[in-house]
Image 1: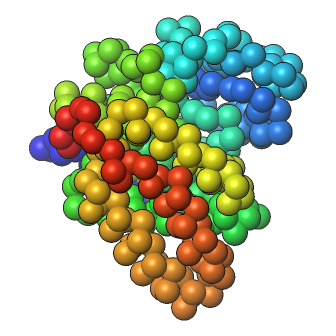
Image 2: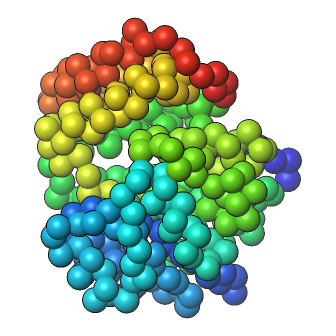
Amino acid sequence: MTADYIYTIDKHILNTSYFPKVSFCIPTKNEAGFIEDCLKSILTQNYPDVEIIIVDAYSTDKTVDIAKQYGCNVYYDSISLGNSRQISINKSTGDILAIWDADIIIPHCNWLMNAVILFKKFNNLSTVWPKPISPDRGSWAQKCYFAHSKLIFQDRIKNKRGVFGGGNSLFLRASVESVGGFDITYNFGEDMILAKRLKDSGYSVVYYNDSIVHNTMRSLKEIYHRSLWGSEAFKKQGIDFYQQSKSDMIRENIFLGFIGMFKGLIRGEMFWLIFPLMIAIKSLAYSGILFAKSKIKLEV
């Protein structure tokens, strides 16, 4: 098989005897309301060799207590998100790294086994990138956010534009180590930098359609604050940090979004009604980077 950069694979069921150790590497800060569901979904996998590494940013709630109850190895760091992720890798021992967030839920017990086998099926594969979806009973904000994100991902894959497989993905440890791991100076976008390093080194990514549930972006307020956090990082690094042109950003957020909204409403997906407000909120947060000068060159 000739190596390509991005493949799309549907959910599958395979018989396998390939069970490399998987290390779930999770940074946390005040995640008590979500982390238990995340840990339960990991520990109920039909997979024989899993460890969980938590790097906590000195939570003031019961995050660490819950993690210890589930047998996690807990370390501490508050320098940056990139530094916390790198510490979790350094403290782990698995050949496969699950670079995870604390609000991810794996939907069924065979998910990990079926995902890991993909590393044996593709040449030069560094990353298995699962499709994220909102919870079944998620808010309209969540459903709209992830439906829009799906359209963006599909468009980027179709047009072979950008980088793929940053956070909430499985990585071959040897591949991550070969590119130097995470840039520890980044507190936002550290996953994008890792994904670009892997792409530039010739590694491939599988976009895996057996979804994981991401219980984030629960309200328009949360979407705004997340966007504001991201925009501050982009202002510091310049527009090229986003690894999309300004026209691509406008096309993805406005054109694809409103086409998706009209089609979604025809299908009866009423959560699309809040899309205009959601995009207005995101546009407000990110307006500064549309006028930012390029500071770095990241051609993809």
